[in-house]
Length: 125
Image 1 (cartoon, rainbow, N blue to C red):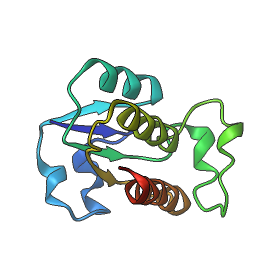
Image 2 (image 1 turned 90 degrees about the vertical axis):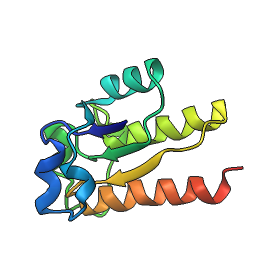
Image 3 (image 1 turned 180 degrees about the vertical axis):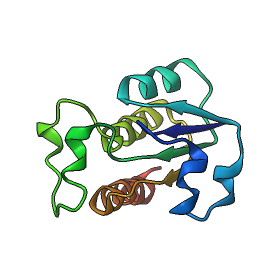
Image 4 (image 1 turned 135 degrees about the horizontal axis):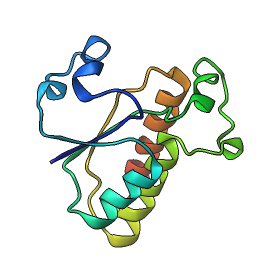
């Protein structure tokens, strides 16, 4: 089972940006925002793979090329918030982190997501 977090796109939409055959498969569960993401993870078996978009609302798009993203100022949570929640969820329940893919076009957001995963993996017991 695979989970795809994106407010607009579907898995095969990201193939033109990320050449990963996994996005061709049709067995993705789609969630569009923080609430749907939390609800799905909380009420179902942990997916084997989760693919993250960073920008889940128009308010996020203006920071697509920014050096810093003001996460605390957003009214709507980003993919970064979803990933942070997932890491805390997995850690508190001693659940293995699923494979994490990132398909965002936001370079700073991509780096923030990747750094969050890398840091978690480096300190997780």
